[in-house]
Image (cartoon, rainbow, N blue to C red):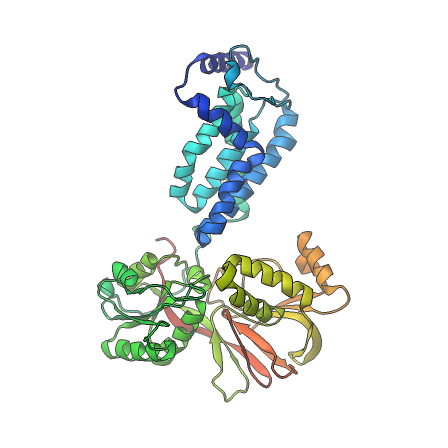
Length: 494
């Protein structure tokens, strides 16, 4: 049987090698060279990460991770387990042949494994993007036979390994669809066909540095034609607080809901008013990062619109920090921090208008790493020197100080992470992060708490919450308010 398969493989190779393929002569040799060392796929991933939104970056990361696993498997197991000589070039026209012929084992095809792994990984995040990449991946696979460096059987084996690598990565790092937020008990919220009874405040300044976006009302009306939209943040427009107050009053009067179109800072302001008026909140992602919307499973205005029209909603937690028990304090939906992170946020916001949000974030992190100074504070009555205090509203996934997202937006806890200062603290934490053992580092402490007391902060100490930077005098108390906010969200199965 083995010899029969080998003969069929060689015969099929000879058929492909001797046949004329219109247009292939100018394209396939260049394509196969462009895919050397995965450069073609890495270039596509870099372009998607730089120019695309969060879904594109996530797809790029998954594609590259799948490619890396496939490449490692081919080079460490595949080619060492099966020693197969490359095809004879006699039937391959000279013009097709590669200048530098590979000298490793012919089985399996590493180029094919990388191509299929990348396309399959991307498809797990977005099937349409994966389908768009499929012809390119298939062309790379076919080019390996066309140029005479692999048998068809090598290509099929490489494709199987590439797809297996993508499935393995998905098993270790589940996709958004696999890790949809858990089905919390549904909260009461009115179904608003076409958005009737929904009063949306659209912040024209969200997601746009150094200026304002064009009028955002048409974008909302495209998904919810009967919604009432008020824009703020632009010339001759009301300020955010006033616009939210008026929208909430109107929504309360007609038994509708409050909507907000903007980033996390805008959503934070809207959440506080929605709770005060007892209104459900519709979050339409329109900012730079949209962490809260994404943790709800809402990545587009269309998804938010479907939830509003169907009346699908859940109750989620809020966290509050206040300077004294009798003061109202402020809410945070995502994160709260002191130490180095507020300075990072401040620098990122300052530079983003000139160089863009992502480069500004990288440069700000580098600057803070070199210049940050420890902060003296009392954490639950214990005095310590710390580089950073991170507090998440609900438990965040991710190791150490790299929280990624929340699985459950209503788990009733604060996710507390402290990086303590000390001798070589930053270096030790960096080494732990690079070795994959951040939780084993003695400078990093983690806890899940219901409340947190922070005292002894120097006057004027900055704190950051939901991307905003401010300062608050006196000791602070952080608490949870379980399932305090009702938000529209599609059920996970949808």
